[in-house]
Length: 255
Image 1 (cartoon, rainbow, N blue to C red):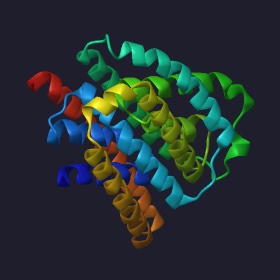
Image 2: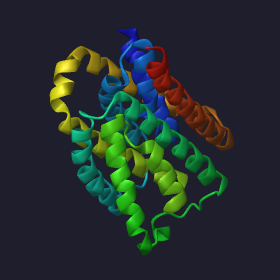
Image 3: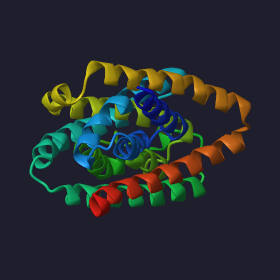
């Protein structure tokens, strides 16, 4: 029982600190502690990712770039429909390679976007010629959510910081909002598997851990300086990515 709560807390903390990495964290912990395979863990991770994003968004109460978010979700829905079919026929090794590529790209994009110091102004900086990037970003979000069981934050956060030049706070809120909707869409497309694989008590424990993480993230934010809190966010993202790559390849190489 405590393992499920612990996973919920760690997923919620990852989302609260970086706006992403919740699905990656759940993927790592569920394969390591619950001994799940990558395919089953990718379905489970959608539940705490959606709940954790929702509770952290309530905590932050910040500005959301709604127009951009809904465009991304629309194209994510189209891609998720195709990905839900592909997930049943592709081998697990393909899923592992796919997740590794996404993780490495997201790590590079996230660190380079922080280094470029995006301005604090938000929505006014989104150029109209980024429609193609919106399509590609939304499709990538749909495939990542459904194939990998990730909310998509690990690619959305770098996309919003680097390509759409949002401030960290607006990018964080918008990423959490998109993550809620994309995870919900992926869950609905795979609802039959969710009902047969997991019990209500297990899901409730994950959500309870998410709620605890909200209070813990708020405590850390008020106890630390802004610069130190930003460093915590950056290193947390790096650690989460590395753990995810390790856990997925461990499943393939040693099981």
